[in-house]
Image (tube, rainbow, N blue to C red; front, side, top):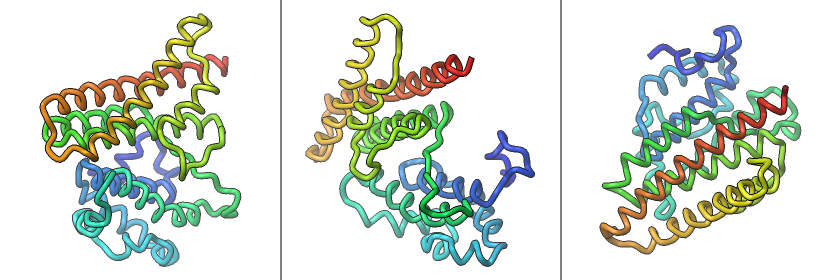
Length: 252
């Protein structure tokens, strides 16, 4: 894979160290949450970033210390016993946050880190959960939980709606979002859609709590997990596309 393949939407001259670091964070999180181990890309990103001694000095310790995603995985894997995907993701985000702020080359108090996702990210994460659901339904549910959280966060960030990132569950984020987004001019459709999304967000949290109490998943639990994963995947894709539609029509 070429170093720039993952940034096809950017011109080569526009690519900044921030973009490289943000992609590095993304592939580390993917490897730690049931996704692919893009070892060659990780090595190339690190090599490119570390050409600048100042950047290398300010890089996350986990990147300085390890030269492969597998080494990072082995280091992080024992850290968390419950909600491990969610906790691993938050751990890496926390590790990278100061580095990304440094690369922004702006006053640290003026930098607002926004989550950026797209429909490809949603589809890829959804597929990752689908692949896991038969063998590890608890892990598949955790991936779905994170996907719903990320989708709600993305829209709230893009709308510049404030929220407490550290303390907000997906249902809380969805509740805030439902107060700021309009799905339809038809009142009945509007009410039903919003109630539906609030129900879905509560259901995924309930399933997330149930999975921690299940020692050996039953066939019924696997079925429920599969249904929930697909409901969340469909809902997140709809939310993203509907928001893009709203933005486009607002701009006209």
